[in-house]
Length: 172
Image (cartoon, rainbow, N blue to C red; front, side):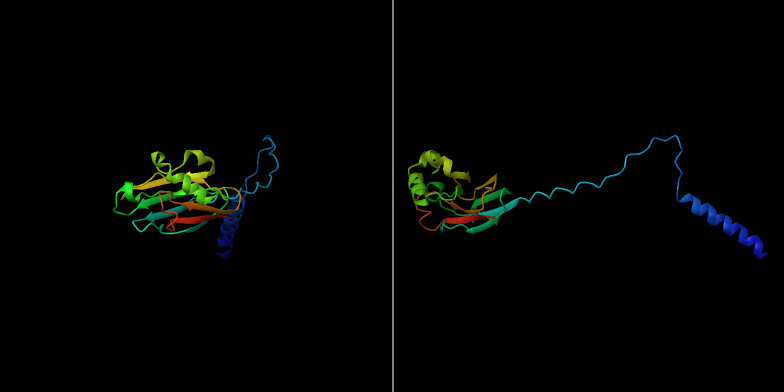
């Protein structure tokens, strides 16, 4: 009886061994040699999200941020204050490094018609929000500069910069 059990077990093992590999027909076209896949490009840096608030105390909620060179940046500014926009409006203006902040804010005082964003100095601005009244928000998206360094941001509403409403974005 042992020899009757061995024969089917051996036949089953041969069948299973043969199932693992398929032979190609001799008429099939030759396949091209495989090459190693090119290394994947590094993933683009995630969007840097900066959420700022301002209120009637003329201060930003944060004054220092770090981003990567060329990174997409999204800034949301919310005015939590209660005073009217004509008395306590807030904006966020990111300036090129090396900008003369005093000269910029002096020019901004004279630019009430353009929400204190001086058109004559537009070449010094990287990005800016609109001027916000109480309980308003604005969101802007821009690419961080590609040159590493410190880029100042300010609120250009009269006297706000002088009261300390400023900060820096460090590009690494």
